[in-house]
Image (cartoon, rainbow, N blue to C red; front, side, top):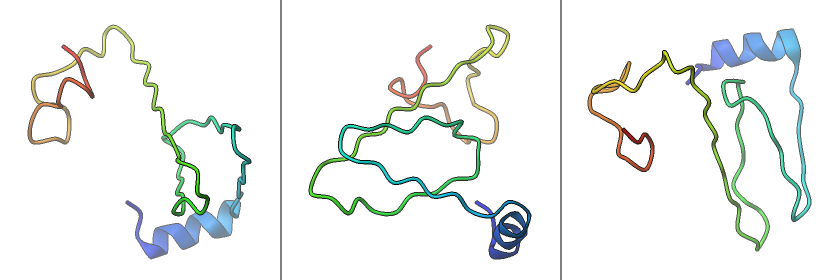
Length: 78
C-alpha cells in the first residue's frame, strides 16, 4: 500500500479519475493499477469478481512469492 508521499506524487503526475456506476453497470480494469473504492453507499449489494490470467510457465508454488503460507483452494487451485 502506498504511503501519503507516494500517493501525492502519483496524484501530481496523473491526477485522479473517478468512476460512478448505476445498478447493473460494471467496471473492468487491471487490478495492478493503483485504485481504491469507498464503501457501498447504495442499499444494493456490491459484488467483485477478480479474474487472473497467468502464463503456463508461471506455475503455482507451494509457498507463493511474498506470502508466508499457501493460498487456500478457493483462491488458487492446485
